[in-house]
Amino acid sequence: MKEIEIVFQNKDFLVLNKPAGLLVHGAPYFKEKQPTLVEWLVKNFPQVKKVGDDPIWRPGIVHRLDKETSGALLVCLHQESFDYFKNLFAQRQVKKTYLAVVRGQLKNKAGVINLPLGIKKGTTKRTIFSSKMTKEAITEYKVLKEFKKGEEWFSLLEIMPLTGRTHQIRVHLNFLNHPVVGDKIYGGKKNALLASRLMLHAFSLEFSDWRNQRYKIEAPLPDDFSSFLGFDFDK
Image (cartoon, rainbow, N blue to C red; front, side, top):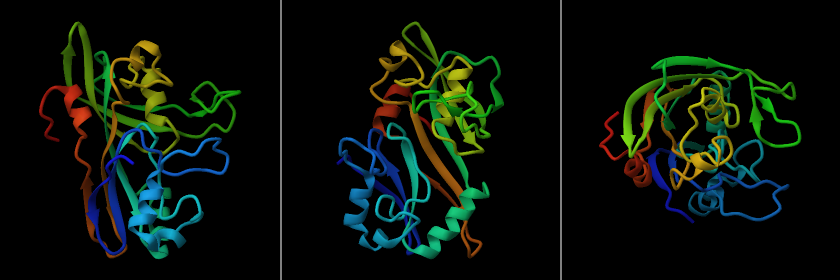
């Protein structure tokens, strides 16, 4: 089990810094058992075993991150908290900010990608060229810094997904011909070899709780992400 850092905790919820490469939760259709964040969660916070819509597989889990994505993940510690945050995410009242390293230099240094996503026929991959289960997907981005490694340019982006579709950020950036570095699914073989991990990190969550207290909780950059950047990042 990779190290899981608690970046915030109170009696209602936790925010964890999920490591890249760790699955959030399992599912009954998985052919092989894999380590999950949920295993660590129920061991350390057994009260979550009865929390959520599907507590057998996703206890306390109100949103998710891709296995290869690191960063801030909110976990609810009781049912009242779960019901509140489930509605908050559904109403798009949680501001999610990601950091991503992509290949190349973007022509437009800020913008909005508004392209619906569906499932690619015969696969579990997401695509904008599909009519199967197509859903609205909107991603805002801003270039924070451009830098060079060897002969190749890279860009560090701030990403604000306004919707929460599976692989949304990765598909949208690949559509711009600037795939996330290390993306094995959407970026091609050469891109996958550029880094030891997917260079996508859920940096912060911002929201108000039911007591009207405002939170902005940040998950520090992992060492492997910082190492690839090669410079100090101060958001």
